[in-house]
Length: 595
Image (tube, rainbow, N blue to C red; front, side):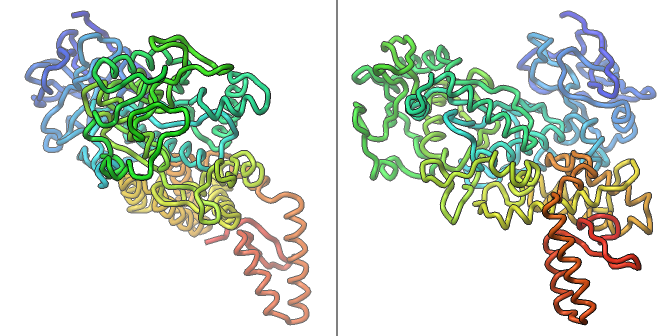
């Protein structure tokens, strides 16, 4: 086997067994247990199959990292490191083999040490991390389950994206932001995450909308995909690794339908192709309902020729004036459900670690994905299903079909994207989220307070009061509990402000720690001074000054009740008043002097 020399990358290394063949295991061999036999300075001599020295370096294509510091800690802590394990998955650069030490096991499993050590040191204190720390609620089982990747150290995540026929609303925003945080946190834990979020760019809604406005379907979808990316950027959402479109995967869709038909799961009817739900005994497992319960009240739509109301279209024959592609069944286009099964198979493989989307997709879309994918591939489709609660407007689910959709761009114009992000993370992703102006105003004040805490501090190394970082991690490890994680951030902000005058050095460290933890949620990445200047527009500033003048008049009249009411009103809006010899000044809550 070809030998590979380490490629040093500043600050990033992958632990491996040097010496060519000794650094590679054949694909499919059970995990090798390689005891630590001794140490030589900053490296480790390993016995067993490897028998070489673990050095800091990087294999071409390696995606996990381990630092020189971590190597030294491993060498010094024999009790915590009973064994080292080689990962079983081949590196992209090592066809047919696996890199020894691409991920290092400690007790159970440790992934990329360097990233965790940099921001989350509590994760590797004593080098004792358990594989089952992070728990996620699985819609399939109805329970929280430990995240156990199919391939150690790697996560394949597929999320259902937009149907590109209109602007994105706040329901879309919740999906974007929540899974952005999921990806950020998993990567911070050292996982190599492959994040795929699809785009539906052909379906009935797109065709109808294009006709109504008199444009080509392709032009329509391009317009709204561009708008979606603008909204995504405004919310501080990182782009997914892949963003497949249905129209670019027609071949893969046709191939999957052919396999289903050959296996007896699909049938032809009047030019269409349908999935025969009765052939899949596990149908309804995700919905936790039996097929007869799901069938009750379901009916075929006009023009459909399916045998059972529960059957669903895999391929639709062409209608006059509609986009169409050639297929073994004649010109037509794919059904909606088959798109995701084909695209996830092509981008992530037969088995996914996590599949997510809105609660409204649980049935029938995700139920149908399971039926298609497992019938075609013969293996369990998804390990963990994540479903987000509805965004509600006046206690009703927000949806374009209900006419109550609130567009992301409209709220960004009023409140700013980071305020929306904080608002969305203030409620657990599985719970319903009530959208009101009052809640958005509260989120804006909260964000001002956090940035006010950061303002005016000298650069410093991040630090936290005892227990803060552990509580933040515990919140995120418990099914990505962002409301609890935010509560920890505000606790840290209060302590930072309290120490600003008495211990400015420690306060600066805490401010740096606050920014770092906030970054794991995609928050607090802006310049605090810029945020402060933009937080209060000229009109609002005039209103505040008018209230301050009214308060001064009330105090001169000894109307202290009115004066206190004005102070309290402004405090509720995140404005703090400070009285001094030169008069009264105002500032945003969280700025210097607040506690």
